[in-house]
Structure formats: C-alpha cells, structure tokens
Amino acid sequence: MKKTSPLEFENHFPLSQEDLLKILNLSLSQGGDFSEIFLEYKTYNFINMEEDIIKETAESISLGLGIRVLSGEKTGYGYTNDISLEKVRKAALTAASIASTPGDRNASSLIPSSFPHNYYPVRESLHKAPLENKISLVQECYRSAQNLDPKIKKVKVSFIDLTQHVRIVNSEGLDISDVRPLVKLVCLAIAEKTSKREAGYSGGGGRVGLEYFTQSLSPEEIGQDAAHEALELLEAEWPPAGEMPVILAPGHSGVLIHEAVGHLLEADFNRKKTSIFWNKMGKKVADSQVSIYDDPTIPHFRGSYNIDDEGILPKKVLLIHQGKLTGLLQD
Image 1 (spheres, rainbow, N blue to C red):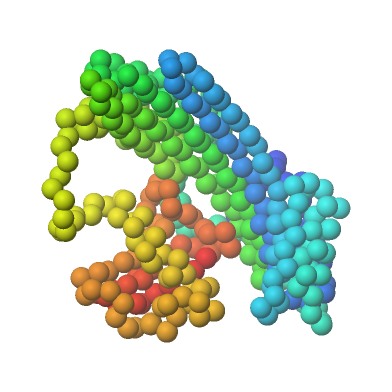
Image 2: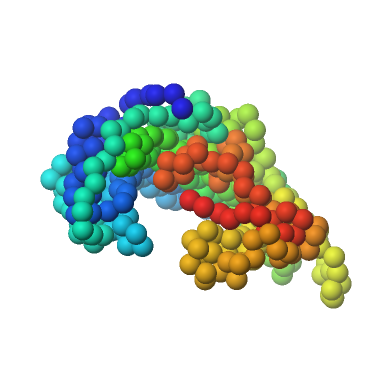
C-alpha cells in the first residue's frame, strides 16, 4: 500500500504520530502481545418532516478513542472522550493493567498507509453540505408522496446522514485512516379508503454523497414509490393460505440469511466452539443449491468498507459453497 499522511485527522485529534507510538508502548508496559488505538470523530444529522412542517432536526458531533491490549486470551480495554495526552495515557494504563502479564514489548514504528481502492468516493462531504440542501430533499420527497393521490392522508419523511472519521494504529506498525459517509432518506405514506388504512414505505441511500439523490434516485421517486405501495395495498386481496414456494429477491433475503446463520458463521464463536458449525468446515450444512458469500467491496453499499475497524482490507468471503461450509466471518 502506498504511504500517505492522515491529514483528515489533524484537526480532530491533537495527537502526533510520536504521541501515539508512546501511548502504544505505554499500553504494553505491563505485558501484552498486541495493542491498538482506535480514534473516531463522527458527525450526525437528522431531519424529520410530518404534518406539513419540519418537525424535528438534530445535529451531534462525537469523538473519542479506545485502546485495546491483547495478552493471550485476556483483553484489556480503556477509552476516553477527552483527547488530552493525560487522559489518553490513563486509558492506556487502564487497558494495560487489565491485560497485565509478566514481561514487556515495544511497539513497532508507525508507517502511514492507505487502501488501494476507495469503495465510496463522494463529491462533497455530507457534514459540509448546507442544512438547507438537506431540508430541500426532505420537502421534495414529502410533497411528491402527498400530492400523488387524495387517498394519501399522512406522510412522514426522515433524513439521516453521518460521517465517521477513523484512524487505527497498532503495535505492529499499522497507521491507517478512513472517512466513511452514510446517508438515508426514507418515506412513510399512509393511504385511506372507507375504513381501510394501509402504509407504504420507500427509501434510498448508502455510502454516498448528496449527489446520489440527483444522479441515482430522486426524492420524488422515493416519495411516489411509498405512496404507490400504500395505494396498491388498499386494493390488495389476501393470498391463499398454505405451503408454497417462495422467491426471495436480492436485498431482504440477506437479512434472512443473517438471522438464520450469520452469527453462527462468525469466526470467534467457531474458535470457542460455541457455534453449531465449529466442526463442520468442508462438510455439508445446507442444500447443494445454496451458496453464500459476504462481499464488503460493493461500491457505495451500506455494508461496504475500505478497511474494517482493525485496519484490515476487505475481501469477498465464500461462506457456503454448494451446501458445504467453506469460510467464516472475521473482523
């Protein structure tokens, strides 16, 4: 990976690379095999519109860091929201004392690095976009749903955006940073006919900038989709009851997979033998038509990342291939 300076973080964290290396060494001063510092600065915005008015807005900024020390099976952890050197040193000593073992170890020199692919480039940072631009998106979405049909009696639109700045350094010399955008615009429309009431829902977003709502999916489309769904449900009839084949579309079928086997495929549970799959590697665990893989590299998707929270590059992982267990989820 090419070397780069984590300039995005100089305004958020008053800690130099030299400071961070000293903190890593302090966290290993009571023993330990590995130490890590996770620094985070996050901005959050929320807008809600209903009853024809902007009913709620919220904005927050949070920052802090966590220090983790591993020693065999022991994990020490300390954290602080006060990024002064004194408080950070205290957090390091807390983590060190929890995972203390005989001996000590020095951290390797930090080498700034970057990732080879950016899976969510944006034209303009979400937290820098004017509030009025975000409110306009909400109002456009609201009006498009409300004006579609007189049977639409209630509309609610919410907008959420957050930007997470992370920097990860560890005792093996890693020093890497990422800026993770996330935005969502959702609409709930309620339609009424005589005594029947139905709700429609639609939304869009991902790890994108505001340009997404002009280039990919407009606020008007989101509002109209929600309204159309509510109106269609007013005319819908109950389907026949009984057992029948079900066709799963992309998207929500992933939620079913997650709930059914997602946690069972986590490597930690299998290492500790608490998952039913712990001794099933290479064995058949599903129908031969079933293949499942985890892909955190799809551009602009909510679950994608340039690095995980330990600074590791993402990759596609084949979990189940033609019914056989072939891989596990690791973070």
